[in-house]
Length: 454
Ligand code: UT7
Image (cartoon, rainbow, N blue to C red; front, top):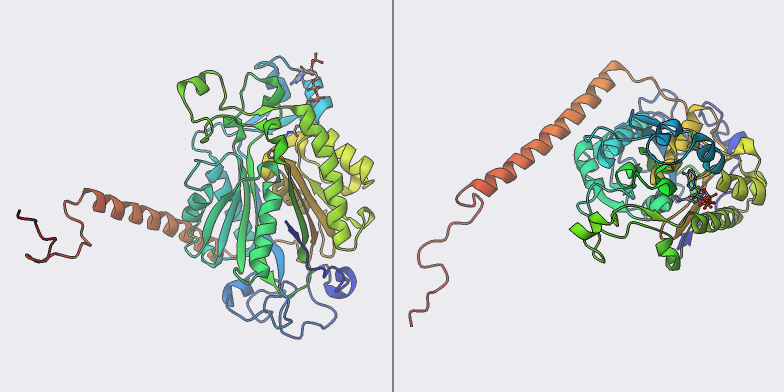
């Protein structure tokens, strides 16, 4: 399951495509679209402003006949509560030295407040991504929430996010591919956009795995953290964006990383809760071996499909599970130097689907992503699954200062979404308690089903 449009070399973005401030220098912008493929005659001052998205969402943007999927907004959120390795020493038989040297993790954020859930973290990250792109939630066509710790088996966490955002024109679903989920979701987003089915897709990775780890199991509880990251993927006629993706799986390794109970194979019961089958179980060594192999192989393959080699990579953002996996796969096997590898797992631990988007946001904040850069996102996880994605970054990374009226309008949008949701719930409640269905068509006497008088 993979695809590529093979257009990586249509332009040299760094030199003749876009300047660093996002303006098109080569005059090739004949159709009036800015660097993101958005109209420059909108209110976005430098032409890449997502204002133009807002003002002309229906504007024909495909005059070149090609469609591209560009990441135009990004945001992340982690819970406030931090648990350090030292804190863990008080809970299980472990020590800071072991955790640092075997994993690279120093601390992780954990959803301590019961109101902090995968959806609540996702909503904050998604709002930031929309604000970054200056796109109204009603413009979003699809919300994909990759998560290994959904709020429920159903409904999808993505639907809760849709409701809270007021994304009234969006389909929404959760994607289950464990820690590879964000790359899988990007691939789905790209597919929808290239097929012409969507203009904007919100891709989220959101986790509260702290609620699924056994805090007495030192093999797992030291590894995971909570958080959410989101990107807004938009249709564009500017070459670049999400290019080749490769997705893979090997279900023969399903048992190496699993939550055995709570699904249809082993429904939750007093017994499953009693023996802890509802917690994460992992064969760490097996996952480690698998991860180091697939990370290197799928990165090399996805680059090759774009005609690139590891030496062309400006920044690789691997799934943040263990620094030793990254060192082995990326530094040793792919020979990508350390300064081109994004690592932030020391601060967050393994946030599963959220790890790549959080790392992407931090890389952008640190000035490590620029238009024209070749990026790779690569993940692996339970399933077993893996996925890699080559991105030609083509949009400006500077945040436009939002006027007070925009902030005001945003807040009003979110309040309206909350009010709309409450109203709909109230209407459903009325329907439930009303003695007669208010929408039922009255049946005149003699029109009902005939009674059999015999
Ligand atoms: O998103 C995908 C999620 N999963 C992963 O990416 C996990 C991939 N695997 C790993 O990252 C590593 O295998 C671990 C970090 C989980 C474990 O590291 P390891 O170097 O493979 O350790 P190990 O399992 O071989 O254990 C070595 C020793 C054992 O003691 P003995 O049997 O040698 O006496 C463990 O009991 O370390 C012990 N140990 C610990 N000691 C202190 C295991 N966990 C801990 C701990 N603190 N937290």
